[in-house]
Image 1 (cartoon, rainbow, N blue to C red):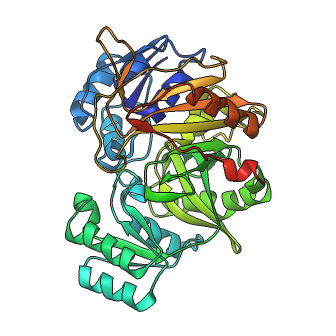
Image 2 (spheres, helix red, strand yellow; image 1 turned 60 degrees about the vertical axis):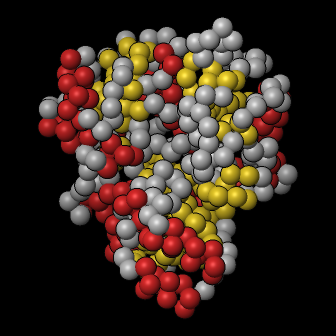
Length: 425
């Protein structure tokens, strides 16, 4: 098989790395890919514009690919899967209509309310003054969300009324996130522990993955602005078992069934961002693709061939997945200033890892440095992630930070407390 992966970030780097291990795969083509992906054996990046669907369809036809997998949310919400399928191509991901589950928070909340899928109480607004009046009525803490796509940054957990009102001004008044802030969802602030729970889905066929926990805030102690994710780990032992089964039966399967009933069956990766509350798991958000950086700590633990998994779910077979007992920890290195403004072009070098088989650099925003100094240059906010697989979370964590401590990382920063709350339990 020849596989086409759409995307260029750390999630896609991990996906391509996993596909390349399959005995069924002869080549993985990535559009637009990255310099780091090009270093993987049997993998090739092709310059492409992810918004130019006709060119991507032509690429898939010309290369005679057997399967196309779309990584990021934007091309999914824009209908790339529909265009691939219209050309008679096999693709794994949700249609434009099904991707609204991530593309519109109001769509997702309305569906959860209709099918009684547990989530936070909410109200939606398109009028700034009415939204402000609502916040002044109910008070804080409260959560303000831009309705559309905002690269993981369109959510403000406001501890005070003033923070919530400022978030509204930025989203609806200043349009910080463009059209994504044309409407907002305001919801109660759930208390508990967050959990990322993903599944391979095709209609009513659901194959759950292992759990992961992401760290959204930029700085230590879960402080600072929300980001696309500063690190993750898998498994989440204290939230596995009964919690996991409850989330599968009350959230993942009911949502897959709801989409079928609504006439927009979901195919692809259904991602539930959960809060484990005293009342049980509740949905914070749904995504329509692999999480980032969760993918980088979940896929290294998957022992079943990824191609076999996708083929099984598309054949409506709920394959029993085999997972490594080992844990995986991933720590993100980001450009200083992220998630706000940041500079590109900072040169960095990767320190040597202790175990190349179990320590993996997944690149998100980097390019090769072609000067005599060699190494890499930053080319994005989240630059790369170091993932470590080890017998325990504690070992994976210490080994990861030991490697990161070997470099100065000028112009980059990383959180030094990923998963620490778990190790300290």
